[in-house]
Length: 205
Image (tube, rainbow, N blue to C red; front, side):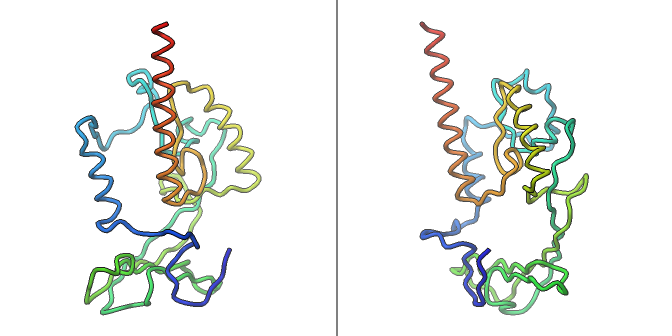
């Protein structure tokens, strides 16, 4: 991992970086507002749905899809501690803390993600890392030797699901930055449409 001792907000050194002016929520809301999309919330996924729909794009944890029948994949989870302050608390969006004596891993000060806005006060979050347990939100896949071997078994099992595509950080058990996430979503949609059109053409022959 790169180490630096300055107030550079960039997480990595991509040539082009940016934040949506109105945030990602605004972008997703615009996508979901399309007339061809019907949004249902607060439903638990059930594999019986595979028989109802032509295709499922599953973005949940791949081991959870199979009800952990081969074992649980390990993840890191997070605990967020919110606090407020006057003015500017730390001078940048994210400050990492790597000293063993500090119990949290970083502090995020969100107003620095949108420097075109002006705020007299500030809201920050301390992040505490923990091993993901049942009921926790899985954030980061732990891709070590044991987990990779178990993942291979789940990937083999996933090949038996003809009407399901496993996508995203949890569905593929990979750490994905937002640019990769968006690119893979677009590519997945493109490949799916092409496969569907090929299948329709074959049926017409």
